Each structure stands twice: as C-alpha cells, then as structure tokens.
Length: 265
Image (tube, rainbow, N blue to C red):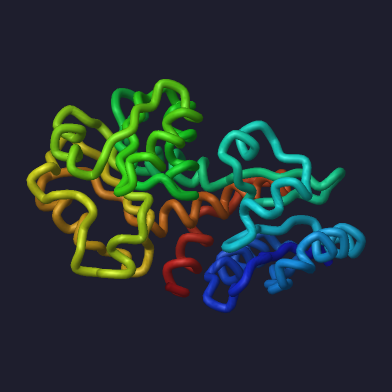
C-alpha cells in the first residue's frame, strides 16, 4: 500500500483526505491518505520517520509551511516563495509549493488568460504564492496590503512587482485583468470584502482564495459587475491535483477530486 498524507497542527478540519482518496479509488490505486499532528519540536523527527517508513508524499499546512523549508531540499519555486506545502519522498526529500500552481491552474480552468496586470490583495503565505505564480506567467503584479511595509518586502522578492496600500485598490484595479484575494477577509467576516464594490468591473477575473464560504461578498459583487469569478475551492483543488501528479506521475482525475472536495466542504 502507498501512503500519502498531511502534516500540520491542527489538521482535523482538512478536506484533503476525501479529495485524495477519491482519486485513489477512481484510479484503482492501493493507497491511503492520512493526517499527522506532530508538535513543532518533533517536526524534524516526524519527517525523518515518514521517510524511514516509506511514506510517498506529504502535504504541509499551517503552521509548518515555512518550518519545513530547511528540513528538505526545496525546488527553486518553493525556495523563492519561502514555503513548502508538498514533500516528495521518492528520493531525497524534496519540497515544493503547489499553492502557486493552484492559482494558475484554477484561473486557467476558467479560461482566464494570464497576461496583462494582476492585483494581489494580501502579502502573507497565499499572497506570496499568488504573486510569484502570476509574475512567472509574465504578468505585471501589483501587491496591495494593509501594512504597506509587508507589501514592499514581498514586492522586493517578486520580479517587477510593485507595493501599495489598500486605499490604492480602486486605482490599481481600473486597468487590471486579474484580481486575487489572498487574505482571510470573507472567511473571518463573511459580509466583508477586501475590495471596494466600485473598483470591480467586467474586464476582471476574480479569484478569492477563501473557500469557506464558497460564495464570498467579493465574489457576489464581482459577478454583479460582470467579472469572471473563481471560488477558493478551485485553488484548493488544483494545489491538490498538482501534488497528486507530482507524487504519482499520473494524470489526476480532476472531476472526481472536485466532487469529493465540494461534498466535504
């Protein structure tokens, strides 16, 4: 049996197990996806144990995405982002960041052309992944954050990116093609949006990384403005699809994984 899993603390809320196990069943794989909650001081030992036990791959969630970076051999993208969310144990343990692919594949699935200008709201972990992903596609990236200094720090790492405050959003979005909300606004406060309604327009594609709830105020207002909308479950799905394909070398059954994910939300 092949074993894959998720490491973090806490992980009881995760919807990754049903999503991945639906893929194993669809492809007739003898595999399981399990969850682990090691303490922070046992993280290195947990990874060594996973490698020794023959676990094929682990996803990594909060609060360990940055902590595991020095414990594995990160690929160039994960190293630039500064976080690992997927570990491959097929050889020397290697770290990857599939959150970036989650952004681009979610948008691509909705026929969004990744060219022109992107505005990323938020400079935390999801914002870093989104900013690097879109910059690597050749987009001009504008990073807006409540704390401008944090946006400036991220913009200094991302090629040709610029940093702004949230007060600049209306101007930033006027000629933008893609908007990514990489903050938790909409989850912590469902009736709030990080973006002014009047800044939204029909030329935008809007991805909200929040997946609980699926329909955030931002997405409702974006749809009313005529924008293309992409809910956060698509990003969650495609980071999982990317991890599955990395671990197995097989094409993921995307529709099956999507159904299982949305049933679990």
